[in-house]
Length: 601
Image (cartoon, rainbow, N blue to C red; front, side, top):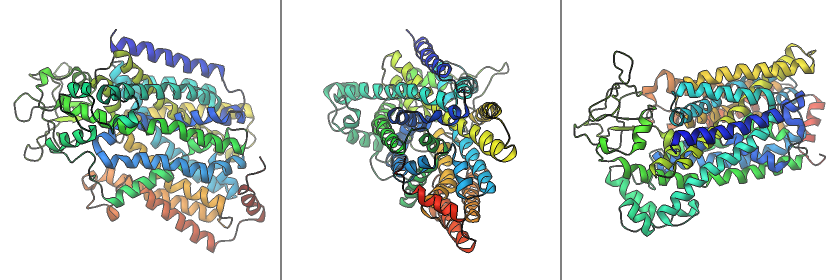
């Protein structure tokens, strides 16, 4: 049976499961819709949190980034994992004791100000839309390859699915759907890694396999001699002109540190993750669910470096110096999606894969007068984007980083059902996070804006209607950003973490641990932090992308890491303004003291 048939079967079954759960768990009250009536057991909440957090960026993109960046890619592992430790230690139990629905609600009451609450709503919506763009793009990529539709059509299909279970079930439906999605995505991620680890090293544990020596079967498969897999990969990289895979990265130490820290504190400030800790019955449950989430996340995160090295090894061996007409079928399959492109630079009909960019700009393909893709002399799709001069780089191949996990089973020639399972896992990862983000946006609009500020007399029934309308509108906007993404999936998500780090993290930390923090300080800190970070990112990524290099960055810090500076600005502004403004009311200070002793629930 072919990949397409297997994909229809496995994706169809998994989607049927998600929709059935959404119907079973339909929200009947606002408590159901926002916090699942606080009845989610810690283990299930940890599993749902893992699915919520392990987005398209983690499942689809992270191993691809490590595969292309080598050591530098480890900052994504360290940042996102470290963020969860911060979340479990500093935030989860205190926010659970606070016991309301949303982060903007906490901000509004802690800082005794509707203005602070509105600013928090805007920050939550801004961060969530930035993050959800990456998820919808990931959905489009998976659908385009495995269901053989365009990426835009794939995004629209994803919008329809997530609209159904997010709007119908709210937090209750999303939670139990995410539990099922976690099971699908972790099996889909681990199974190919285990197969490839056994094929190459004989070790069934991929976390150990990528540090092992090649087995006899692996040597025959790769056409090489014995030795450690990573040593062989280093040599292969250097033979092709790349830096050693395990050697020093291209990024400076300060940039790696800043990006890692931004991802870490950004994780602890992401509103769709924080809101999950409002769903457990007790404070102890909130802390336990953070621990379970860390365990479930670690299963995937410790596997990612192995997947990255296997994919890199297979990629280099599969494509370099191969005649395009005899190139592996996966190259041609992915070329149809526009995520792989080749143009013969030196006229030898072979694929030359080397350091540097093959093309000078975004990839575009030539079309015939009747609108069909133009096909070149070797059967390739003709690229209309100009090539970089051969004196600059002899590289002829463009490979989108986002495809590495999805293409890995095909590169390794695993059975078609494994390829289809990975597609289902990628969809589960992207849709689970998208649903969580849409819920944050819906809650911010219906509860924090309409019910709490604009129309306090709104009935619970009408509030539920507004929440569903808000979720529906959010799906449409998310779909737009999925069709017009501002970068790679993981890069877009990295920006969201930077924005969360510079807006929410200082606000929540100071709100819990410093009773002298005032509403004026909170508003000024949030605005300064997120504005600085957003302007820096927009300037280098969208206004002057030609200046987006270390020579022009502030202190050598890239847009992905600037959230750390934004966070420091937020802290400093909040501290200074709080010191020179009137101290908070006594009841607010008593509430802060109470939050810090979470033993009563």
